[in-house]
Image (cartoon, rainbow, N blue to C red; front, side, top):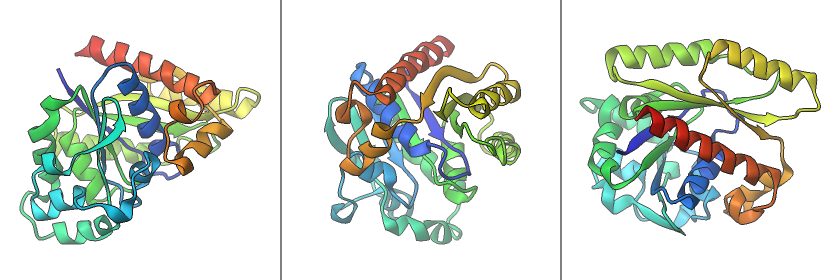
Length: 257
């Protein structure tokens, strides 16, 4: 049974795209067929897996605005089991273009429904905002994965984020659930990181992954080379952590299914 997950936090810099690229790469490495959908106009997931954004013929924009067949927009990343529907800069204007479209909040749902069964997991990388593109993602998926940074303002805006999820659940996607919370940029040497973990666990009772993603230089370097961490440095702490997270993710998500 396949599953679709939006990776969402309206705060920027929380490790959202890093989590999409590396968790998906690790799941693919473990034999799962994975599709990433980059619905962020910045297109960092697209470039982060080594795809030249300026040379794309079809992107998620063409699906949302021009009603292209999603199957024609899927790109093989050349990594076994890992595929992507890329983003492009055109997507920045998509929210305005969608305002006149009927059922505009459900355009991505139509896309995912047509291709979901071809994959074990479909991950949607959302923009760091609460706009129409993020609403599309939340309306289209089974669950939400929330990355949270182990820093001082970690829980700032989380109430608003949960309220958005609640509203989407009420009006557009009644089965939407929180898949889990990933804590990123953890530094076990600081009291602050440890306090943030405790706070987040209290807030999201039972939904926080035990695997913590550490601050790691190799993890920060990998996207600039168009690689996941397991390609860039398989022996790094970052690679080890994302492989552990993939194991935990598979165990928990398939146990629920």
